[in-house]
Amino acid sequence: MKKTILLLLTVITLFACRKNENLETDMDAKGAKLDLTPDGADATAFTSDHPKNLTVVYFVPSDMKLNPDYKRRISEFLLYEQNYTKTWMEKWGYGAQTFGLMVNDHKEVEINVVTGKLPTASYPYKGGAEAMSKEINAWFTANPDKKKSSHVFILTALNEFGKQDVPFYGSETWAYGIDFPAMEIANMGKPSAIGDQAAWIGGNFHELLHGLNLPHNGGLIPNNTQYGLAIMTGNGDGFITGKSYLDAWDCALLSTGETFSKVARSDWYQSPSASITKLNAKFDDASKTIVVSGKFASGKKVKFVGFTNDAKRSADDLDYDTENWITKPIGTDSFYVKIPLAEIKNKNDFRNDFRITLMHENGYGYVASYAYQMVAGKPVVDFGDKPVYSKTKWKVVGVSSEETVNYDGKAANLIDNNIGTMWHSQFSGAGSVLPQFFTIDMGAVLAVNRFTFFQRDSHSKLKDIEISVSNDNITWEKLVTYSLPDIAGPTHLKTQLKNFRYFKVLTSTASGNSQFATCIEVGTYRD
Image 1 (tube, rainbow, N blue to C red):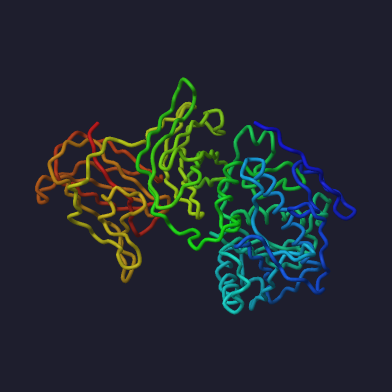
Image 2 (image 1 turned 120 degrees about the vertical axis):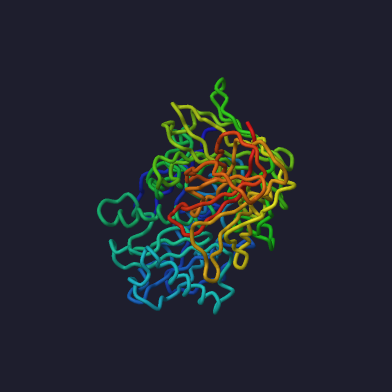
């Protein structure tokens, strides 16, 4: 792997924090010295060479005031982060790309001040984003020219350190951060509360990157050894004061985003109706690699194919420790990757969630989720295509309920061979409750000893189920009861071999204690 190009860190004001080996701190993305106007001074027009730019909002609750020198401080670290991103984009071969910002000729970033109608306590960490975003959206309605893209970064002004119970996370294309009076790059690494306040710059950057489409990323073992801590691991720890990095997966995903493009388009993040049409997966013991290949279909160009591995150490384990790999498509519809077992950090006997992401030219990321079990340090990979029976003649002949008003959740989605659609029990109107069921006519009597349930990557998956079979849709025989694991992707259930035409699936419970039931696809086959 190529060595990282080391850039000199320039001293900011009179203080030099510990060096990050990759970036300059008081330079903009083009290397020009920052020349920021003081707060209240006249500023020239804000411009950018990007059609779409990050919108920066400084949100001031009614019981707070503007923190001193906020324009200079925030501009300084945003331009630093813009340059940091560009450096890693160049490092991994994506060119000098970075997110767009509206900047004036004094290198001052456009910061939109929105005064909150309520005190800080009305915008808590849990649930406060809804109230805050409502007011910000109302402000955008009154000032439509100020919203430069779908990506919005909100910094909440807090006048006292230690009182930060406000939104601090990424939520789709919006990200929420914090501003304290002493939060500036020159204070990072200083002892006491001054340095503690400044350290939140790293957390802000982590959340900003969430708002620019990045999920968590635990980094690959060799990269972590060479470059330090991935920014999307933890919460921005080590940013500027230590070694940190964006990896190739992060940069590929960023490169397809709205604010990174210098080409105007009107279809940002619109679904291209993508799907994985063929999938082969195995663990090759000789080479100690997981080999995954397949084909996809999509209505738009796929620029990159990403692969994510996430060991689930507990039921509520989050994705901070993931590994990610990135490839370019083969031709226009195929992918292939070899994943070294040595690059998977946790080889204990845990379930691993495996995701394939199709990164499109318009920023849309189609994600297909699967799972496998690690046993005695080896992956038991069985999520590839199975010899399921053709569903050409299959019909749904019974269902307890289906959502067709506020969502395309019809039961026919269970057998349409499209993992982009699913059955969802009714939730509009009076809604529905468990138990729920669906009945399938396979069109002919078939020999079956396997059922495949492809489940969503969210709550309300089928959990405790009962499968009954019939040859006439009148007389039924209970075949099996089973508790499906709470995992996304396919689960292959083995039963005794039976010949039947109809099968009914009754679910009495769903994952996440949901009162609703969902399933993406169901199939049958014989080993």
